[in-house]
Amino acid sequence: MIPVALPGAQGATYEILVGRGVLDRLAPLLCERCPAHTYAVVTDTRVGALYGERVTALLADAGLRGAVFTFPAGEWNKTRATWADLGDRLLDAGVGRDGAVIALGGGVAGDLGGFVAATLHRGIPCVQVPTTVLAMIDASIGGKTGVDLPAGKNLVGAFHHPRFVLADIDTLATLPRNQVAGGCAEAVKHGVVADAAYAAAVGATAADCLARRPDALAALVERGIRIKAEIVAADPDERGRRQVLNFGHTVGHALEACSGYELLHGEAVAIGMNVEAWLAESLGLAEPGTQRRVHDLLARFELPCTVPAALAADGLLEAMRHDKKRRAGALRFALPRTIGAMSQSADGEWTVEIDAARVRDALAANR
Image 1: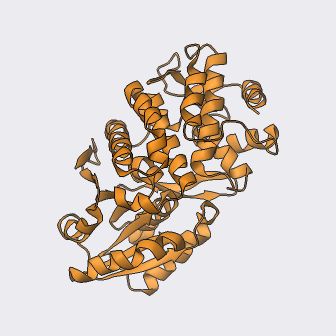
Image 2 (image 1 turned 120 degrees about the horizontal axis):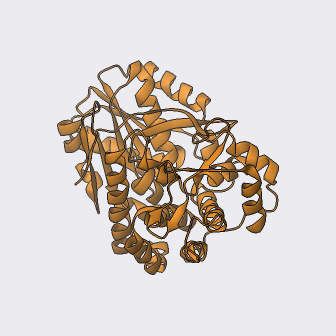
Image 3 (image 1 turned 135 degrees about the vertical axis):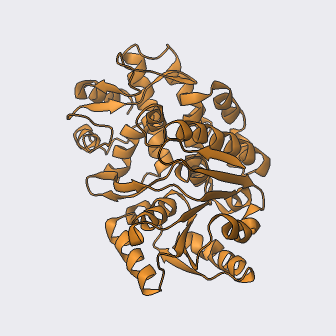
């Protein structure tokens, strides 16, 4: 169990259980840590077909009531309309204030399921059961929930921390290779922002992870979870150092939106990290060679690193202007100082204000 202790008014601690075969422990953990009259399993159609029946069987065997509520797979379905539809269906099924949501699947299911839980009846408990590398090491931890708008990603949402997170490494056996690679982009990010030794280990085990070897994935996921948990516990509301986890995401989210979500999140973030590392080096904020090292780590996972020619700089900049880190109309970026450490602005902020012309130069240099 990996604890996430929330300070201050939130004052709670939840735990992340990671390992092989731990999905079978779901029902007793629910009874202990998230008792409810009814459990609504929110998942997409793809994951629902793989694991929905197994999860409801686990609940039924323990005498718990549960039902699966699916939505169409794909980031482009992470919308207010899908959130509203799920809420209506849960209400029609009688999920009340004594109910709970089990968010089962990747980052989209975690965000949507968590947001439904955060808003239904002004908030009911949620449990995160991630089934992708990305969701295990990033999306399921930290309480961020929400949906995308036409203007950009995750612009409507709420912080709603889970009662616990259950990450079963065995569920990664059904994950497509490109989804494994995309999740490993977030592992690279964790190494760059916080742990040079982890970054090196991630790179060294790239081939084994892409081959979905359980031991390699377990090591990558567990340390990735610990890094995210440590940062979130110190800054649950993203008012300080937690902002470093947005490295690659200002450009990455713009790429996702402008591509119509044809780029996977991890692919877009990989390109974003390469562009933003170039930006950090060109500004003298990062040590020489930082971008090359970031690029080399991403290349080991066969991830894209260059901005697609079809995506115009004007459109990408307009999408970035809707980024949540923007302040007073200025673009802000979380930028590396070296592998394992991030830059800070002169006033101690963990994001740096960058002129749009500089960003345009970075995009042009990395096509």
